[in-house]
Each structure stands twice: as C-alpha cells, then as structure tokens.
Amino acid sequence: MKILRTILAASTLIVAATASAQSGQPFIHDPSTLAECDGKWYTFGTGGGGIITDDGWNWHSGAERPGGGAAPDMIKIGDRYLCIYGATGGGLGGGHAGRILTMWNKTLDPKSPDFKWSEAVEVCYSDGMEDQDAIDPGVLLDPTTGRLWVSYGTYFGTIRLIELDPATGFRKSGNKEKDIAIDCEASDLIYRDGWYYLLGTHGTCCDGVNSTYNIVVGRSKSPEGPYIDNVGRDMYHGGGKMVIAAGDRKTGAGHFGRTIIDEGVEVMSFHWEADFDMGGRSTLAVRPLLWKNGWPVGGDQLKEGTYEIESERRGYALELAVDFVRMNVARGGFGGGQQGNAAPPQPVAEQKLEDVANTWPAGNIPARIGDYMFRPHQKWTITAVPEAGGYLSNPYFKITIAGTDRALAATEDVEVTTVPSFTGAPEQLWRIEQLTDGTFRIMPKEIPGKEGTNTKYVLYSAGDSTPTLAEYDFNSDNSKWNLRQH
Image 1 (cartoon, rainbow, N blue to C red):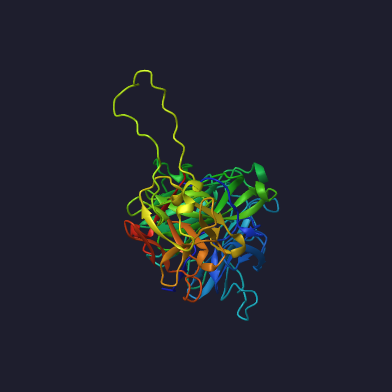
Image 2: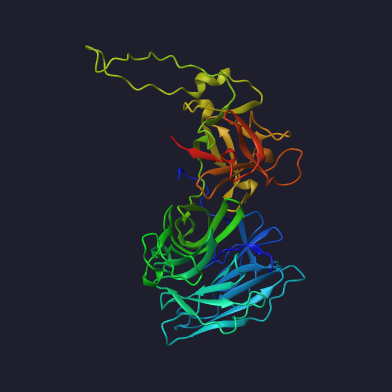
C-alpha cells in the first residue's frame, strides 16, 4: 500500500489493552493505500473488491474494482482516481509471467452515477523467463516535480522502477525500467523533507500465523535510488531498516501505505497476515506513523489504561482544580546512615481516592495543570467507546478520573471542564492521535454550539497551569501531550 494524498493536477509510552484492530469486517489481503472519497475511506485488495469505512474505524465490504488480480494501489490525481494492479505473476497460476495495468474512475462510490472504470491499460510485464515479477505495484506522485513513479516486483528477482504519465496513466514514452532493490516485495515509494523512501515487505507471505512478513525501508535523494538504510546498506544488496514487525498477537505486517491527515498527523496502513484475535485471518491495520531521526517508525495503537496526561509545554500534568490534600506522613531525618536501633524504613502508601473524593465539589469541576504528584485528582482513565464510532486508527475515547465516572468535557465557550458523570454526549468523547514526533493531540469530537464534528480545536496549554481548547498547531508544544503510565 502506498502514500495517498489528494493532489491537484500540475499538487512509546503505551501499554494495557483495548480494541486493537479495525472494527467491523476489516478482512483484506494486500490492501491499497487508503483513499478518501466523499467523506468515506476505501481500500482495495487482492482478488478484486475492497472495504469501506464511513468513520475511519468501522469497516464493511462494498468497494468494487474490476480486473481481479493482486495487490492494487490507488492514488487521487486531480479529480480522478488512478488504480494500478497486477493481473497475474507472483507465482499466481503457477508462474511469474505478469502484467501491471492502470485504470481511472471519477469516484470510488459504486452507487454514484459517475462510477465507471476506464479500460485497463498495460504499463509493464514480466515474461516468466527472467528473474522478475510484474506484480505488487506502488505509486508515488512526486510533490516536487509532478512525475509519477511506480515500483513493483517480488522476491523472484528485483524491485523495479518505471515512470508513468500522470495525465494518462500510460507508461512514459521511452522510459526504461530500473532495478532498485532485492530481497523484498510489495514495495512503496514516499517523499518527505527532501528524501525519497522505498518501503519493502520482507519475510514470508501467505502462510497465516506462520508468515514472517515485516516492513523495511531505505532512503535516497533521488527517486531512482540508490536506497540506503540506517547503517549504510543498499537495498539493492538486501539492506533495509525495520519499520514494523509482528506484535500484539498479530503477525505478518505487509503492503505499507502512508496517509497524511494533518500537519504532524500521519497513519500507516498495511495488512496483518494473521490476527490471532480474529481467527488468524488477514486484516487491515491502521497505525500512527512516527518519524524519528528522519526515518519512518510504526507507532502503537492507543490502548486503554490509567495515565498521567502530561503537557509537552512544561511537563506539568492535567488535573482537577481541587484543593491539594496533604498526606500526614512523618518526614525522616536528614542525617546519613541508619540511626541507632531505628527500624528500617517502610513503604508509604499512596493517597487513595476515598481519602480525598469527599472534599471535591459535586458539580462540574474545572481542569488545570500542575506538578505531577501521582494523586487521585491527577490520574485519568482512558477507555474506548466503540459504539460512538471513530476515526482513522482508533475509536473515540472517554477520559475520566480513575475510579470515578467524572469525565473530561468540552464546553460551549470553547473551554474544558469535568462533569460528574459520563453520559456519552459528543463533547465528552475524545479523538486521541499520536503525532509524528511521538506526542499526542487530544481533540473533542464536538463542541457544544458548533455545528458538526470538530476538526479544529484541541486540548491546549494556554499557560503553564491553564488548559483550554484552541486551534491545533503542530509547531507549538502547547498543542501536545504525553500519556505516561507510572
């Protein structure tokens, strides 16, 4: 799967457990890059067809793609969608003779009167004799030049690069294929900050719970390579830095795709060859995409648990604005060593919720930011609310004071407070996304009095001790939070 952007024609700190896979029926193999069309997201897989989500979290069947074959990719160029796929090859049907084809559509919605795929056009092939497979294409529309590149191939030979005409989807006249990598398949090309990245799927495929697929990467200053990994190995000689591998009872990560949601908010999509919690079936995964020292890294899906919510601005913690209740524990002396026959020191019990909750007001309690002291008014439990829908990578969450039903909520005057009980109201639901630098943005689903789903305002440090809601700004630490478990 490959980077998808809408381009105008010329343009870890997480542990514990929650919903850890896309919801509904996310069953797919070799998924294409996530493509947005009229507010819905689509991905297409091997064998034809694909799956759709209305909210980014709950997936169902219904996407349509003719031609069958394997491992398609999808990109929007101008006001049309270009689909590219392998008709055969990859050992399908017993051989490696393959063809890669392209076709266009104005929409991905099969119910639209504009839904009609153009006639498929061959752009490259493998003859079954040379060490080459024309299968597993990945597309990049270079944002710096407007040139359209395709990488393709499998373990049976090399990963090759060709150039297409972005206006027609045909092979560029006179273009000659170039070998750029070995020892991988299901490749993808992306561009970021002056670097071109080649992502390949390494390991064994199509063996269910025994598949060893993982995703690796190299980078270059040119789309034509050479692609070098973090320790100087050329991917043409088998190099590649790990991006994501098996974990969380899932194995066989393959067919990478990148989707940019907002500045500093990116996700990677791919499939698991086998999800142990879903009968070992191949499923769609959507994870945060992080960037560390110029390299892409697969983030973790946010999981339920009790956290300190720490402001990146100062390192202070989100808390209830209640009186600080002192703990009556005798302070030890300042002298060194054990004093005479004194008993050895004993652990001090933490302050408990029942010790302080009766001092809190009964109604709404504002929030503030302060020194973290692991006190009850500073511990927040994050819990998935899957029945409320979701967004790309997660369901919505509620954020409550640990051990209580007191919930964080947005207010009509674009501030933040806590209410005595969680009711499921949209202003009490939170979209929590890991940013490319590893921090988080925390965004209410809706703000009372404002129409529609909120995509603008986030939990924000207006001062060292003052939380509010304000416009998201990736370049400001005021917009960023860390989730820490102690």
